[in-house]
Amino acid sequence: MEKIKRKSGLKYRDSITINGRTIKSPCFAKKTDCISWKAKQLATRDQTKIYGDAFRLRDKMLLKNYAADWLTSKKAQGLSTSSIENYQRYIEKHIVPALGHRDMKSITKTDLESFQGNFAKSHNPKGTNLVMTVLKALMRGAMNDGFMIRNPAEGLKKIAENPQVEAFWTKTEIAQFLRGNLRHPLYSLFIVALNTGMRRGELAGLCCYRDWE
Figure 1: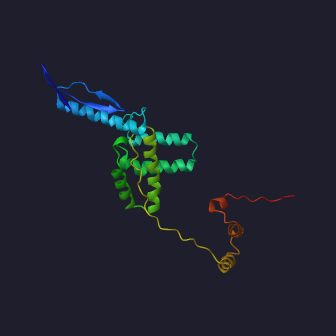
Figure 2: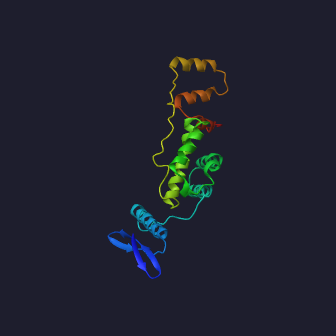
């Protein structure tokens, strides 16, 4: 930092080098103003290195407002109705009450880890990971849209889930089940399920056609 003596008093001036070019500051009457100027210039230079010359951080955006816009964009992309409904439920019931009032730029990785830890206390690992997947997508979208410099969810690990144990019936168990349900009104549907492996929703959608001729 330069100190320049003038008739009006002592002045302060500093400089910064960007791409080999030295840029000098105006002359400041206060040393603190000169320090502040350099700090802003360094921040701008670092952002430009990471994001390019066109990078400009956008204005304040609350998470609850961004989430509403994000959901609208997902609907426009043609996501299934069930997926949109799940996203909306996770956001409105869990994410917004905890973080909705926060400006996207102010949210840190520590905030997300705290949210994840508190949520996991009352929900199973699978449910926690589902909500966190939506929250991570919100953070990624906000960064891409210029509402935050870095994605605070980057590197955030999932909660370990208990591995599912696959259960299979033996031929003897299948035979016992069919004998025990021989007069059940859905016996035919049981046969279809056992021989095709269709899911419950697929079985429920089946229709029965008869040849009346």
